[in-house]
Length: 324
Ligand code: HEC
Ligand code: HEC
Image 1 (spheres, rainbow, N blue to C red):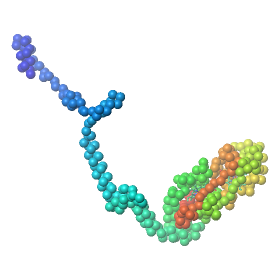
Image 2: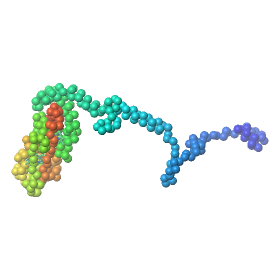
Image 3: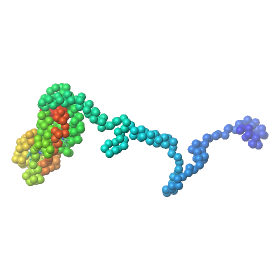
Image 4: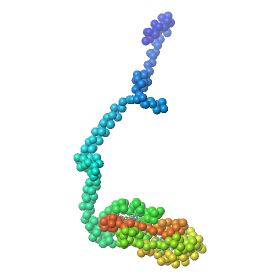
C-alpha cells in the first residue's frame, strides 16, 4: 500500500528526505455491520399479498426451532393420549395404558389414612366426651385430626385461626366467652346439632325478639337501652339515657342476658358487660341488633361428619384457649 501511494504521489519521487521515509498508515478497515450486510444481500421476502393500512404481510417460512417445538408437542400429545386418560367418552374418558386416575389416587390415599387411623377413631368414639383430653396420646391425635377438620369445615365461617368474623356474626372460638357453653360436652353438642338450623331437631335454639321492628319498644326506649348497654360494657355513653335504660333492660332483656348482663349459655344469650362482641359493640351496631335482633345460624354436623371427627374437632376447639 505504502509503495503504491508513493507511485501515485508525484511529489514522493522528488526525494524530500523526511517525506520519502514517511510511511502512510494503512487504511483502516471497518467491518461492515452484519445486519447491514444481510440487508444488502437478502432479497425482499415474498409477501402473501395481504395489506392492512399499508402494512404488508411477509410470507417467511416458520423458524426451524418453532417447527421442531411444534412437532414435539404433537408427538407428546399422541403419547399422552395412549398412556393417560384423555378422550372424553359417554360415561368416562379413555382410560390410558397406565391406568392412572387422580380420583383413584385420592381414594387410595383416603383408604390408607382410614386404615392407619381406624384404631384412633375407635378410641375417640369409645371415650366419654368429657374425658377426651385426659389421655395425652389420644388428645394429641384428636387435636391434629381436629385441626384438619376445622380447616376444611369450619374456617370459612369462623376464620382460619378460629378468630371469628364479626361482620358475619361468626363468633371467635379463641376466647373464654361462650354463647352456648365452653365445656367439651357443650362444644360437642353445638357442633353436632348446630344453632337455629332447620335440619336438626336438637339444634340449639333461642330467639331474641326484634324490639324495634316488632314494636315491642318505642324509639326512645331503644335509645335508652342502647346507652345502658354501652354503659354496661364500659364505653362512653349518655348518663341520663342510660339511667332510664336500666329499667328497660330489667324488664325486657335481663330474662336472657341476666340482671348484670353476664349472659346465659342455656339461651345462647351473650354477655353484654364485657368488650367481646359477636356482632359489634358500637352504638349503631347495638341499636341495629336491638331493633331487628339477629338470628345466627350454624349448620349441624351430625350428618356431615363422622362422630369421631366431630369429637376431634370439639377437642381442637376446646384446647384453643377458652375451653372450660
Ligand atoms: C355456615 C357458617 C358456620 C360454619 C360452617 C360453622 N359455624 Fe360454628 N357458628 C356459626 C355461627 C353463626 C355461630 C353463632 C351462633 C349463635 O349466634 O349462637 C356459631 C357458633 C359456634 C360455636 C358456639 C360458640 C359459643 O360461643 O358457644 C362453636 C363451638 C362452633 N360454632 C364451632 C364450629 C365448628 C367446630 C365448626 C366446624 C365443624 C363450625 N362451627 C362451622 C357459623 C358456622
Ligand atoms: C329471648 C332472649 C333474649 C332477650 C329477651 C334479649 N336478647 Fe339480646 N340476644 C339474645 C341472643 C340469643 C343473642 C345472640 C344473637 C343471635 O345470634 O341471634 C342476643 C344478642 C344480643 C346483642 C348482640 C351482642 C353481640 O355480642 O354482638 C345485644 C347487643 C343484645 N342482645 C342486646 C339485648 C337487649 C338490649 C335486649 C333487651 C331490649 C335483649 N338483648 C333482649 C337473646 C335475647
